[in-house]
Length: 192
Image (cartoon, rainbow, N blue to C red; front, side, top):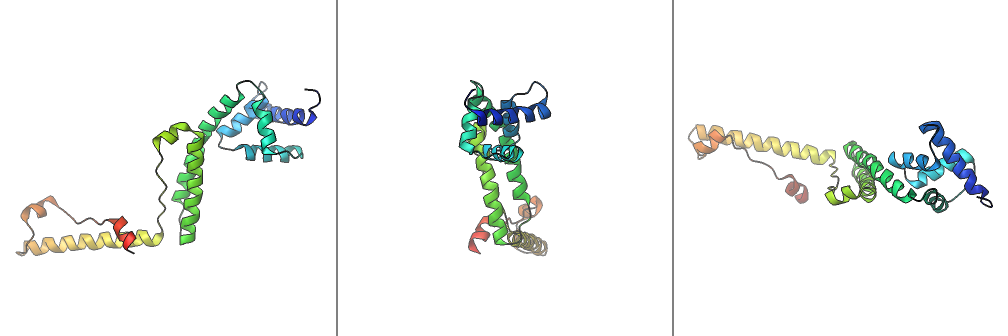
């Protein structure tokens, strides 16, 4: 388009990358959709283009350029974002699985995981409908306490079994069913 040299340079740069990475028939929109389906957001795509071209532009300006590339650009971008939402959900899971040694680590990991979970839900309507549960990040101290309480409960149950075998008050039905006491960890955590 005449009178829009900056736009033309950005579109040409996107098309060049698309053809290098996706094949000779790839277009500028294919570059954007490939990045979105990989889990990137438009801000990251913009930063990539700025670094590649050495020319500044805003994310809003780039969004305006991209949505005008083809009549169905918005729909293609939405589909690509939905595919990229899986990466955000996987990242949230990986962050939740990271070890946390202090309460600050736990809070940081929870925030990082929650942001990625929220991005996944925002970009993929199916994930919104399934209502992804909040990521629970336990501290090492909570896990250790829970393990000790579970061991104590098992030892107490075993002691009652032995007592019952020696004429205690436990019923034979309870002994044969192998019942053990379970510990409600949420209650224990709240009382701490």
